[in-house]
Length: 201
Figure 1 (cartoon, rainbow, N blue to C red):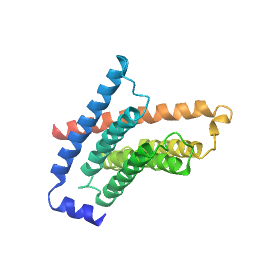
Figure 2 (figure 1 turned 45 degrees about the vertical axis):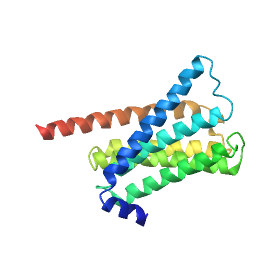
Figure 3 (figure 1 turned 90 degrees about the vertical axis):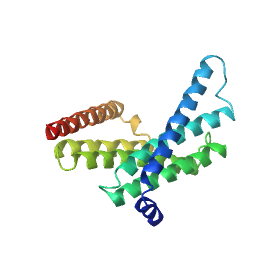
Figure 4 (figure 1 turned 60 degrees about the vertical axis):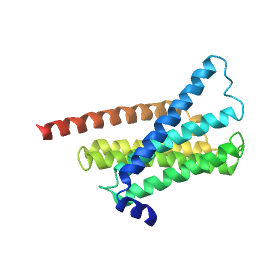
């Protein structure tokens, strides 16, 4: 983490963001290209094509979330670096998983990788919202963060073998939670843009 601080202090942040942007766009484009090829008969469901496809999307998603973490650095240095480290760890573990043929196994390594990846994504979302909105709309933020944690814990328990969806009406509750999270994210995004517009005027 200390080395990451040094890199950012040397003014390389913009260059890193450019590299990550190019990587995200390129890998996403190649991945979509492979899926389009699949429509016309190219088999992507066998190795090594499947491994390449998953690798491309892992790199694209990882690069995208990494850019978001770097953008938060000026306002929340430590949290930004923690978020970035979680993403890097998730990407590395995912690539090891894909190319070691453990992806279809029910190993502890697979479970740990999936849980860390989920935690990385949800942590990145929470931090991103908190930095942009700060203390405004506190109640909405509190509801959002609580539901995100609920979703993360539920999925993590499922990965480790505890299926809460067997409980009566739990699937409906979980679905509602996901929809409310989506609605809150959109609402907070709109409120943030409205606030920026008002400040500009």
